[in-house]
Image: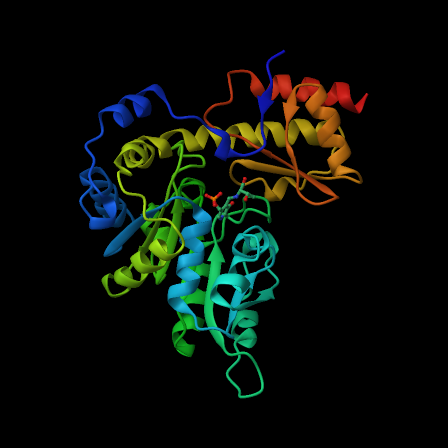
Length: 337
Ligand code: TLP
């Protein structure tokens, strides 16, 4: 029986073209800025996303945390949307590395009310001062939902008025752009820094980029080195990243269509799926014993993740074989008895 892996789009393996590019990559010592392939990847990403600079790092956790480090001082607060990856799934890094705490605002489908963001800003001697505001697009724990550009702009205006920087966790910014029918530079516009992952739906084996202004580049590189992300001959990885950046976005619309099909099928089988939240490549279902269901489904040949006790997540991606959605639905039906 062929296992179908819906746990995440991070499970994708490098394509044959990536493997070839990796084998043939021109390399140098990237800590000296001498890796030509990394330099090309950073220049291309900066151009595509409309930023002065991009810095290549091993993971989206590192790009997010370096952003927190460059924007904040110890003791400050970071305003985040509820469920934000930068706090919920980055093992306490914000507190432990930057010494900052989160202040959550509610965010239906990942989009906060800009006025609530404004009210969450602190600037008094009695409270932790706000140092940063961050959005996430697409918003993972809200369902892989797309934050409208209008909401992003309104939050950016609130931030500007208060003199605060705004970061975007754009791990899946290309999924957001495809779903919005917008250019990726439009989704990235107006933020001080943006984190973009190459190793999710775009298919690279490793790597993320932190985009920002030239004035922050030195700090971004210093914190990357401090956290152990100075990678030397990283061109072997960046070569796959270049293909991910140029070719990867082309298959995302298909991933989204498959997620919609899967969601409709799961709903037909009686699972509690909020179809309105199925906007990109994720499908969440609520249930009583999520870990138990995930374990039984694994026995039947479908891998998924339980996110907490009451929710499971299915993620579609480029490495799912033809017919994967139908087969997965058959196996789910069998498990449901
Ligand atoms: N998310 C992973 C898990 O950590 C949940 C996944 O399988 O979805 N931002 C967002 C919005 C993410 O979803 C992720 C990864 C990251 C940042 C971190 O990226 P990595 O895994 O490269 O550190």
